[in-house]
Image (cartoon, rainbow over all chains, first blue to last red; front, side, top):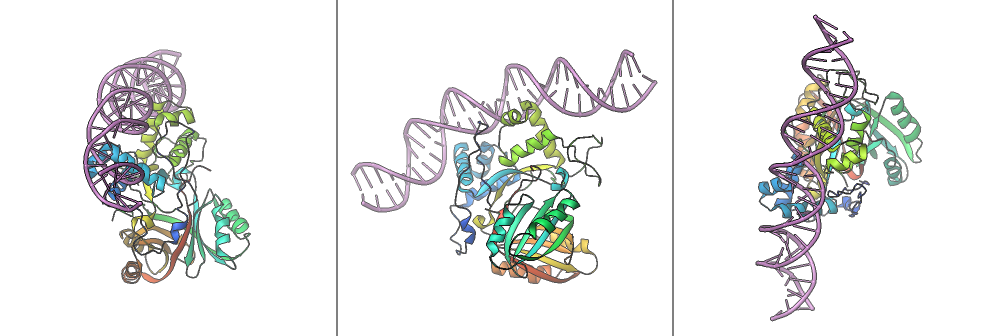
Length: 184
Length: 184
DNA sequence: CGCCAATGCTGCGAAATCCGCAGGCCTCCG
DNA sequence: CGGAGGCCTGCGGATTTCGCAGCATTGGCG
């Protein structure tokens, strides 16, 4: 994702160091079944606990999964360091002042990845994915208002070399947004 | 990396309701459609801190935003209760065993919302949004493998009454995924 | 104007949690 | 056999969380 994994301990405000774990390359992962690092049932259970409440105490998690507090702490730290998991605050864009969202499908000529990289650098792009199908790229955009949205799509995205054409899907209503995979 | 997992803490997280007093916060809250959160600059700064590290201690946050520990704690609790924010673990689907993702555009005849509701009930649908444009709905799907994906798209989604046709965009590579709304 | 209720911040002990570290088991090789 | 590495437990001490009482500000109202 290009962003960083946050470390959890700290107690020091400027301790925002991040751990670099490859993470960018394993999305290539086609490896049948063997790709997953060390995710046993216990780690999965820990993740599940933290999906319910990212601030749940280690001791409570340990009781739920059958491990000591220290063991849970070590596992969580490892999952964070490895980039398998992040513990973050997620918000509803509408409630924090972004009133226009859109999905944009993009047709590319030439190198798709370079276009994707350019999009990745734009702060308004929350989500950039290379796809198979009639679009080469799909991008989710979060803007403050219509003017902002127009400017991003027409001036910025279409100005990227290699972008042949775009098609926009303005959000009318967000019906569902979860982050619960791994718990099914 | 990509993706994530989350889930709400306790009761309904989507409890988006507004506070009655239309407080005139100088930030970007703004009402307009009813959901006006009273988000001032300080709450935004708190959210920003928690987007970097969901487990950051209240005292550290307070030092960063200029508030006491107790005040930060009260604000965070309120943001959680109001459903403005969630603190959760997010994971990379690939590392948790989901190897196929796709965005599906859907053409609907008849009532769009009822189709959307049906999709919302499917656990494989992580993201359901009603859009303006050539698709009426866009859905993100997370599956374990190709068979699973095929079954979801061809058997389940197309079986929903009102679905006229679908177009799939299988993910080749996820380039970016952030949760930084409200921090720009 | 004064009063009252509501809101939001601070400060402060007590309780709970986090954190580092010292072992104790295992397993895996050389 | 011996040692290195991985993972767990247990344990104090430092830190953080939690609940509550005070205080200041704001807005409604007679």
